[in-house]
Amino acid sequence: MTTLEEGWRQLHPRTVVVTVLTVAGILAGVAIPIIIGVLDDGDAILPILLIAIAGIVVVSAVAAFVDTMRYRHTTYRVTDERIELRYSWVLHKRRSVPRERVRTVDLTANPLQRVFGLAKVKIGTGQQTRDSGSHLTLDPVDKAVAEELRRLLLHREAAPSVEQTPGELAKLDWRWIRFAPISVTTPILGAAAFGAIMQVSEWFNAQGAVFRLVRYLFEDLSAVGLVGALVVIGVVVGIVGSLGLFVEMWFRYRLTREDGNLLMTRGLLNTRSLTLEQRRLRGVELVEGLGVRMLGAARVDVVATGMSQKSDDDKTDPKTVLPAAPFEVARRVATEVLGSPAATATSLVAHPRAARARRLRWGLFAVAVPVGVLAVLGWLLTTVLLHLAWILAVVLTPVAVLLALEAYRNLGHGLASDHLVTRHGVGARRTVALLRTGVIGWTITRSPFQRRAGLMTIHATTAANKGAYPVYDIDEVDGLRFADEAVPGLLTPFLEPVTPRGEDGLVCDGVDPEGNVFQLRQRDAL
Image (cartoon, rainbow, N blue to C red; front, side, top):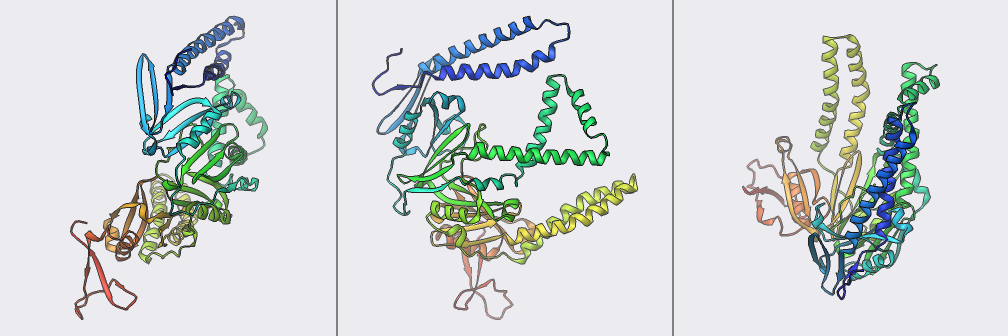
């Protein structure tokens, strides 16, 4: 055993066992279909099996050696000021991160790590990148050590401006599972299931048998009936898959506040524990997908600095702290997380009618393009396409108009005491309550069509999540006034008031509460 210097600790040695079992399982899963695929009726199976087993043993042994060297030569320590990680075998690496830069501590464990009492600790430093410089990872350590590190690295005084109420904010209600199938995940999973069947049957040289089975089962159906039956089967498979995915992701879900931090735990096979400092919170976002919105549900995301990026082995974004749940539950959780009811209680200002006209034009244009293409092809090739063109026009035009009107109704903006609120979207309506002191800049854009309609789009820039949150198609004067009032002084150097000149035909852009007319215009810098 390597002698460690004072304060330095090693990763857990059981990582070697986990690595060997993982590699052997992957190799066995790859080898089995290959063996079946290369075997002919006259081939002897024993030599091929021996070769496959020998290959698995050799590769697993190499993996065990590499992982042994990794864990024995990787050490870490936590001091009063820093957390340090070093690797000293062949290539020497050392990373040191000040403890005040630690933003999140994310604990994950796959099924094998859970069996052996291990966990991976990912320490986020606040950088919005996916490279190794944006976080520090200890993979793996003992589960008790991981919990100790989480408490130690995030034990700071809570933000004095936010009322802290320790305790449970939300826990899993199995009735929420009814919202899982009402998402784009359902058809994707159904299509993926068909693709997986075809791929596996190809591995086992059984695609012909699959097609014969389909013909036998649906021999009495026409081509249209067969397509309909396959679509129904795909939807059913997608529903079952989405239910299973919900269980895997949100099993044992619990959201609590602990020592001024938000702590979320969830997961069936792969467990996850995410801790977020309250003082890093910049807002919350209520996301209402079109399907779940019809059922009165929404999910809650946090807007926070230092949030880790979505990992490849995770099925949901780490900023999601509440899955799709009844809107009253989502509103309560958003209020308790934010410390304010701004996300749901702020009165939003509707946008000008010109914004509605823009969305109607977009919707009609989206219908006109495919209808026009089909009409031209029908005129050149066959009247069947002409009939398809007018059928699509009749069916899609009212749908496009309804979606455009819904998109306009969802536009809005407003100000609360400490937050600004913006809402937009039709496929997924998003209501964002953003801390006004967390806004560090404004981006103002106007297309030629927006300028002609007197509209603009403004983005509130913040050092969290997406980096900017938009207010789409707001009136020019209202938009500048909204930005100036939301963060006083930030936009003021680029604005100047314009005093009306009596009866000279000047069109007034606004009226203040006292009845005085005024106009705001941008300086040349904008």
